[in-house]
Length: 225
Image (cartoon, rainbow, N blue to C red; front, side):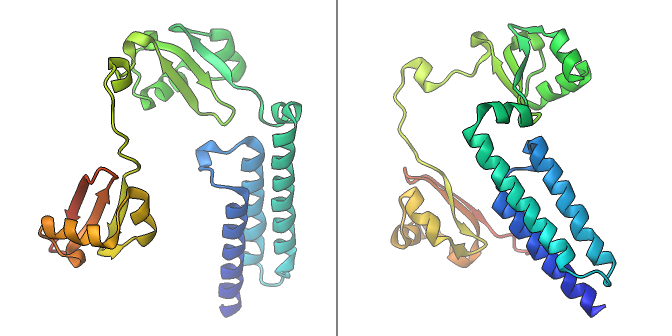
């Protein structure tokens, strides 16, 4: 039992390291090659967890080989457009000026239900509002609305807008995130002044989000927690 425990921990660490090395894609954003590598790694790692009689290196070595293979493929993809198209395919326009390309859907084996569901996930409920909808190589649907259906921005209205920077969670569960203070133009002194202004102690803060303009949102911890 103890051997199984330690073998599982070692393989778990190996898989986490392998995924970190290969990059930070979500499952829904994986390219075909990345999905295949991920499935193979999970299958290979499961075998020695179930059979203690197999040497651990019988799984570790194939995992390392697959990770190296994926890195090599990624480098080739960056260097060769033709290779990238062969391995990943091309993006396909499925809606143009509000009209569905039925031939493209048939070629991609995508149903109208699949298309409308993907549009709803983009908050689009009327196909006629779409200027372009493009099915990307990772299966995601990119949507560009017609000009009269797009959200108006301050740039469209000619109104200058100040750059508030990136809102940062500088306090989480009563702990100051020092690495994020500078990102939102803050330091500990400004943070302490802000907490005094909000009449709240650091230990009582569940979440504090601030930006470069000094705007801050403070959420206190629930008393029950």
